[in-house]
Image 1 (cartoon, rainbow over the protein chains, first blue to last red):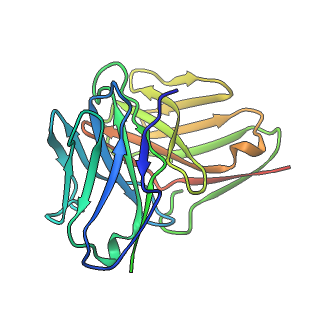
Image 2 (image 1 turned 180 degrees about the vertical axis):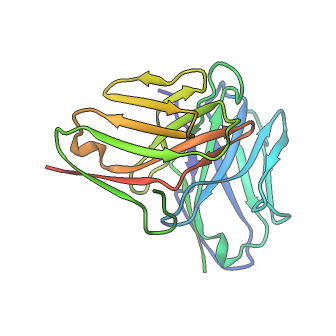
Amino acid sequence: EPEVTQTPSHQVTQMGQEVILRCVPISNHLYFYWYRQILGQKVEFLVSFYNNEISEKSEIFDDQFSVERPDGSNFTLKIRSTKLEDSAMYFCASSYSPTGGDRRQYFGPGTRLTVL
Amino acid sequence: GESVGLHLPTLSVQEGDNSIINCAYSNSASDYFIWYKQESGKGPQFIIDIRSNMDKRQGQRVTVLLNKTVKHLSLQIAATQPGDSAVYFCAETDVNKLVFGAGTILRVKS
C-alpha cells in the first residue's frame, strides 16, 4: 500500500536556526498538508497546498513558515528561525481530493523537531 | 468528555470485549468525518470514515456511528485486541483541513 514518507525522523536544532522538513506524498495525490502535534496534545493544522499554492493556513503558520513543492515528488516545510515553542512532531499528509469521492488524508510517520 | 494536554480520557477494556470511543464535534456544517488511530511515536493511521448523509458505517471489526442532531461520533471496536491499544482521534473536515478532537487513550488488558 502506498505511504507518505518523511525525513528526517528526528531533527535537533538550535534556536534561531533554519530547518527544512521533507515529505514525499502518495504519488497520485493532489492535495498536501502539514500538521503538528505538541507532545501529549491533539494534532493541529498548519497549512494545505494544492496546485502549487497555499489553499489555507492556520494562525500558527506565520511568516517564519513556508512550504514548497520543489519537484514532482517532494513537499517541504521550512521554518526560517526556529523558536523553542516550535518543538513538536510535524506530520505531512496527502489526499486525492478534499471534497470529492476519496477525501481520506493519509499521514506520514512524522518528524520530531527539538529546538534547544 | 474530552480533555487537552496530558490528561486525555482513558478507556480500559479487557481483551475480547467491545470498545466504544466517543467524540463530540463542533461544526454542524462538517460533512465528512474520519477516525484515526495513533500508536506511540507514529503518525495518525486512517481507520474508517463516514459522510454526513449516513448515520452508520461498518468496517472490519469497527463501526462508526454519527448523530448529527447532537454532533456526536462514536467508534465501536469489536473483540478488542492488545494491538488496538493506542490513542484514537476523531477528525471533522473543514474544506481544506482536518480539525482533530483531543483524543482518547484505549488500553487493552490481557
